[in-house]
Length: 165
Image (tube, rainbow, N blue to C red; front, side, top):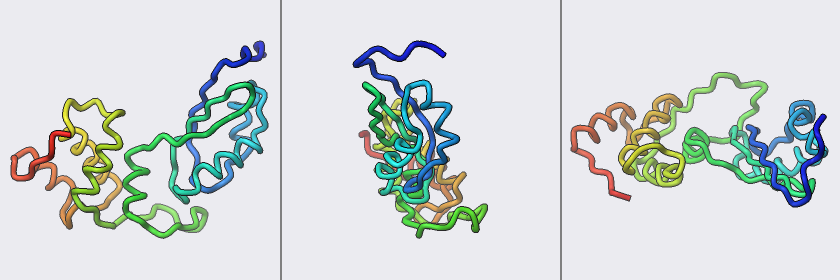
């Protein structure tokens, strides 16, 4: 085991958690033990921070300074799409392989794209919208009542225009 981190030094731990649920201490312990943190306490902090994302797997960034962990949520495309679908929370233990057959508007897809713009490798917002449409396709939802693949083809053809930023 190495020496503890210097005072005032920030250590960052990134992990996935289900929103609004306390993560198991056994899965948090290997990541937090070397930093001198209690997995149970950090799990409760993560639960409080992710209450808005109830039932959705989200990426959580823990910044640890002086043995105090502050959780922040890093939005992922799939989590943002599932949140926009506004599906009721479900019991993960009883319902498996659920189909997300909801419908999004193109405006909702564009707002998600603006949120994800910093993480995207696309040159323009249009490319980010195409990335989000791909995520919509893999989740199984529709956009404006059509398949996300059809919307993608219309953007490429030029019948649908996406704003610059």
